[in-house]
Image (cartoon, rainbow, N blue to C red; front, top):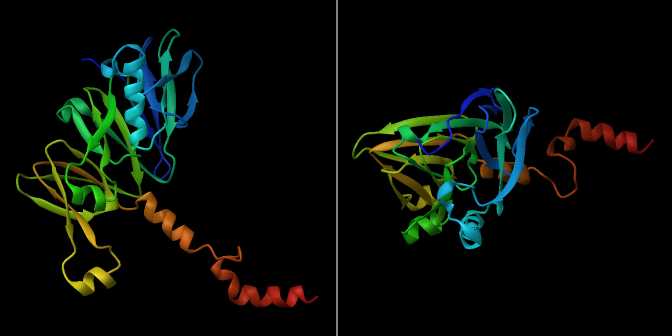
Length: 263
């Protein structure tokens, strides 16, 4: 076991947070800005990259680890939380938008999980947060996540978050699952990931589901989210009128406002 062994508990339903229990000298790493609360005795430190032991020593090794995170759209820095006190201490991390937190035991998932680039929340120290390049041009251009996805490697606990309800599906060898490209949260290392175009001109142009679907072929495990943040954000943005008033303000309420403005 190279990673720190941590205990945890997840609270909440649609606005979840995870509470991690640290023994003395145990450490958890997290994305900057994900901290919710921590008990006295826990020391917080900002580090380059993911702070994992295989990141490399020296300045160049640290810069390389940090550079990988920049490619995934994340910050140069991560934050470590270490129990420097006596006895067990607790630190909690919250998801940045409504959805679920998924605990993943990497030792039970063959030591590697590939996830969308903004899904990682926190992990035991020793888990490496790197990049997974999509080698096929079609996957890179039309896969919804670009050429680069995150990969979590190690044998400890990691926590990822996603929007809406999460569905975990185990694929048998050769079994194929087609999903919207933005709904893919994570997959194990043996799942084959590709992009295919929607068949039929009418379906592609007027179906409202986009031109491409993600094709996942087993064996392996796939995690799917019901509400990608990009979909939620686009609906909110589309509902914002240029005048600054909501759409529902043009009905009966708008009529009353018209009379009140004339008073």
